[in-house]
Length: 429
Image 1: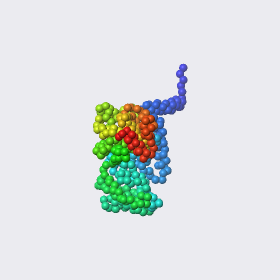
Image 2: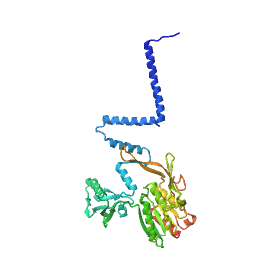
Image 3: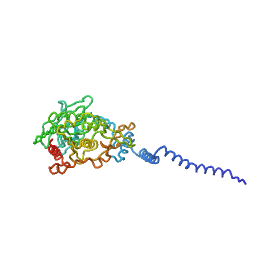
Image 4: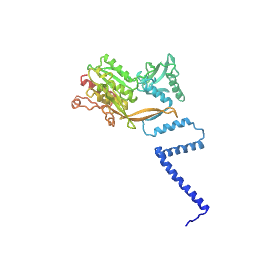
């Protein structure tokens, strides 16, 4: 038996079916979109949060927002939210400086100034390791009383009013900057240290960063040691180390100390070039290190079977000095040199920082600059994935060495250098 319904009831039923189909359709669409867009609900929450704050700013903020600055700040905050201290946002200027510095082409004076109320003038607050200022002997606390560039006196004065100090510092940086028009300059700085006027120093700025410092050490017992301090691993570092080893060898060095204390800056490619100077691996077919990316891709860094600097250590021994500020690529340098030459290379000092990750920059066209992101981990020669969990460790002394007073794990800069020399002397270098 058929039963009829009224037009109104039919219309109500149709509307009910349509209403019921909407959430079903949305659920189906959301499920399908989740397959196409991973973490869709999380993305929706992020966009909702951005939309909420943008609406509040548009409605309530008393000025018009500078959108470029807002976008850059959001990118910076996003990267900081990753919780990785090695990843960061680089502004357009910082990215250019980063690229020049990695290429070894970032000329800089290397000092940071601050105002001293006690001296009523500008003093050096920081001296960057390896900078031209550091090589010239300038130190934190030095009171700058005069500076000249090309024989012309600069604006800096011995006495500065407190309110004018920030501007005086900024003008000093501008006047001592290297530009395309003046790619190589000479700056003479007159300063006081401990209230005493010191002889002026001449600081040369050019188109290359000095990655190392070298000198001969002659001990009282006739030991001739070539000492090389490595500040960072840039494109020109390996070439400078190679030239330094040969120069020191010609001056009579029979063994070497490679000092990477405080060294942390550089990239994997350039440090492997430096490692390759001392490591002859399987006739040039071996691997110095391997980079493992997030997706599991493995990128080996092979040996080139190039110059073997160990041949210049006629005594046969090299000591690598390191401390808790030795980090990243410098840790790989120390570890690999010992791994390749366990009977000839010894690590002295303190355990290193313990960073085995690798960073790479990615340009951000939408906001300018770049994201410097940790992209993977590096394993050294031998493939030990846990090589740096607690930092690279100094050598352990044998009972015979302990009896003779040789110590590998040492704190204190002067004691570490002295320990390195004692080690070399004990081995007859």
